[in-house]
Image: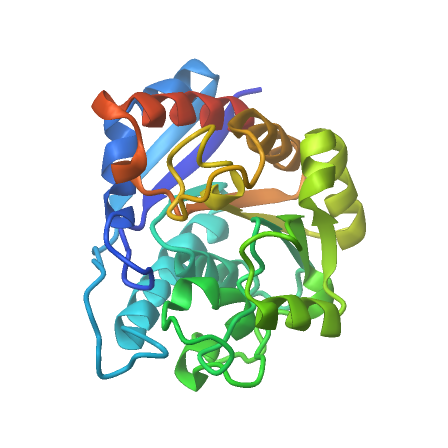
Length: 300
């Protein structure tokens, strides 16, 4: 049976620490993603790109930069993903910074009659708030806003009129690294709220078993959505993540094996690829071409 995926580009770095991620949708296509998906037996419908939002300085709002643009972009993503899900199709959302995932999850959780589960394939939990950290980049605060944690930006937390958008039991973190580059505030929030976690060590030891464990923690769901942050991959092994720390994370193959196990779930409805910065890859799109082939394999 041929698998079908609807591709949406969300070229945004508006919530990031710097520009670069907004190039991802166009350059992944140039690297051959559509051809790779088709070669892997996936039928692709490419809907093109949403309006772009490039990072820019916002010194007037140092603890929550560019929030108006972040909200506008996330709402655009919500509308686009909702159209795909309403048609009964599966989406592949190419970001872009991590707040694109907030828009996708908003669309997926809109129908109250469906039990929706989220797997957050990420070395970080994005549980920071403008109060708890001072970087001002909203792309590592998305989950905090979806859960309606105190100290978040009201307008962003109420993106589509629901706050909280998610409950603790609806999300499982796969690949989270307690020892890694998470903030102390994020670690404390994860522990205090007793979030469901399958740790990075488990992902590295057996990606398929770790993904299966994450699905078991969610329990039965009508709709499964995945947020795939490329930062979960060790930059030294595959230099594409926005955060370029060496010696942290899993391999590209391990991440894609886990994603493949998640995508094989009958409830799988779509995945957001986030935090990929093409500027960090090797020349002539070599790293992007490798990533593209592995992504196609995982989704097939």
